[in-house]
Image (cartoon, rainbow, N blue to C red; front, side):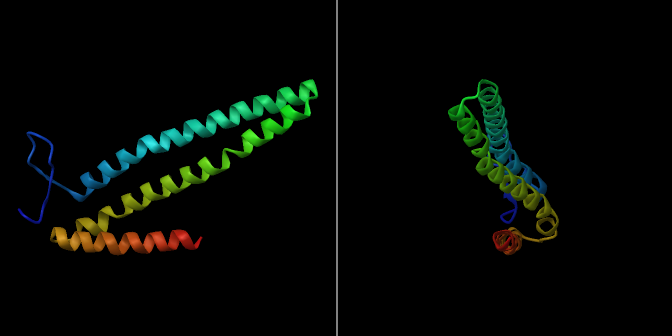
Length: 124
């Protein structure tokens, strides 16, 4: 029992599986993911609208502002991709963690796999 992950929510003392832990981590990332999506959509729509308006009215400053707004969506797009990759990596961790016999072994497997995946992500 000491090696199992235990849910600390009141009234529940059941052990969490590796899948449960991964699902909790992914659900915590979901808010960040949707925030990035909303920011990208907002920047693209407003930027494109200002760009088109600037072209129609022949205003150079509006064209420049629209272009800048469209360009500002690149960083949130990169961050959205990183968030998606982390979620996929977490999902792939379910298999090696669930094969571990103890919590200590699962922790060691997690750290090994996560460090390897992070180093390969940075190399790209």
